[in-house]
Image (cartoon, rainbow, N blue to C red; front, side, top):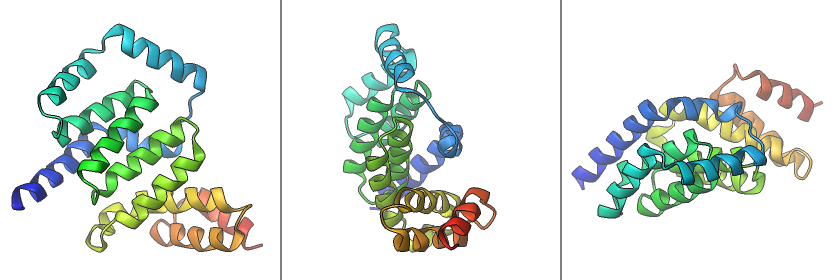
Length: 186
């Protein structure tokens, strides 16, 4: 049990170091589906050495969550959202209580322009963050609540108001959240 906790912490730290740029760009990265398709085709045809090496490592040990996380990050770097999503799902199945995998799934879904699944993954992320992890996850929690509020502003304004209030509670400096809050409460 102690070994699992250490590995999860190491995995989280590794993700922050390796995929930090991807996590930070979750709010601003946009791609179009033609580019996604081209990138996916190029990745599978070009034989990206990083991806190929990680695939071999995972073939040898399919439960190697650190290698899976690196693979998911490599897919994200290549804008291969389908494989990134599928890999994050594998990690979530192996580590169902590890919140960052749901945030990363949401990011990949959002990048693939699958808003419904992005919203569901952000909701799962919020539900999975443990109380003792809230402080270190404030920025991501703020963005997750903002995304959900933005998605719900037309269909459920009352719920959107609750979510935007939570977003601002976690990050009062997010100007997009402040603007949405004004719109929702005017």
